[in-house]
Each structure stands twice: as C-alpha cells, then as structure tokens.
Amino acid sequence: MWDLPLNGYSWATGGYMGAVSSGQTTCGLLVGSSVAIGLRCGQGMDGVPEEYEGDRNSAVQAVGELYRDFLKEFDRTDCKTLSYCDFSDSTYLQQWVQDKGWKSTCDVYLKFVMNKCIEMAEEGKM
Image (tube, one colour):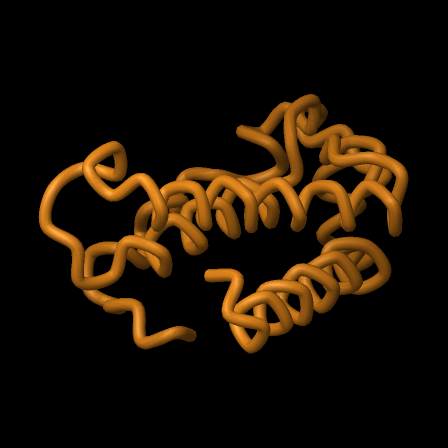
C-alpha cells in the first residue's frame, strides 16, 4: 500500500498481537496505521520528522483524524473491549482463535481503518 517498502518494514509491528498479548492497550490496527501514516508522510525525506514541520503536521493530523473517526464509529480503542478477548489468558485466546473471533471484530476494524487511510490519502491529507 502507498508503495511502502516491504523489506524490513513489514516486521515493524511483527511482535504486536492482542495489544502486546494483554488486550489492555490500543488496538494494533491503530498502532500499525499510525506507523504506516508516518512512513507515508515521510516518504522520500532525509532526516527526522522535526526537520519537516509541514509533513510531520500532516502525519499528526491524519493519525488524529483516524483515531477520532474510529472512536466515533466503535466508541473504544482498547483491544480487549473491541475484540471481546483477554489475550493474556491462554484459554480465552485459544477459544477466540478456534472460533475465528477476528472475523466479527478485527476484520471489521481493519476494513474501517483501510478505507479511512485510503480516503485520507485520496483527499491529499497525507
């Protein structure tokens, strides 16, 4: 997506599952999308974000809009509430995986996040 490099960066959030296996922090889709938005806004830049105030502001505003719209749609950003799974409890996690719990939760959030990011990119917000 957005011509971001696959090599290396695809592992940026490779260890993130179920809000760091606790379910008690922010949805990984939002965390990962924040990383992707930052990479998108900084494409082709040399140096750190602070050296490119306008592009950094675009990234900050896009991440803020994503979170605000996500909250409007789903009322929460914490993994445990959104997924109905306590990822720190292996029994719940096994049942959630067996039932493919992500299909009625995470897949819905993924579709929303992807559509929102595409919309913002098409509108030139990032």
